[in-house]
Image (cartoon, rainbow, N blue to C red; front, side):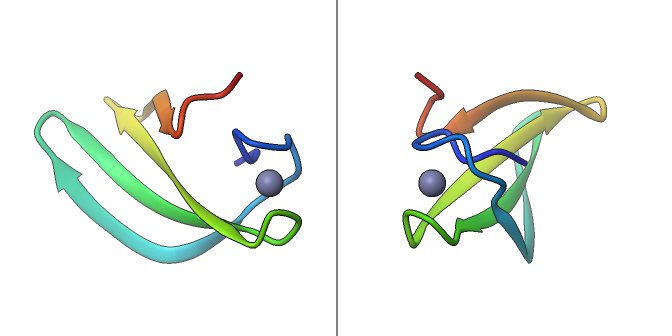
Length: 53
Ligand SMILES: [Zn+2]
């Protein structure tokens, strides 16, 4: 998963959770050193938090 802040490849933290209809996945970006989340619906990427620019 690419970091929405800088576009570098983020690392999955292994953290996942349910968010309504979405499945959330936690990532950290080694370049920004900040976390971000990806949300999937029906196995497809829906959006990231924060949103990609
Ligand atoms: Zn980044």
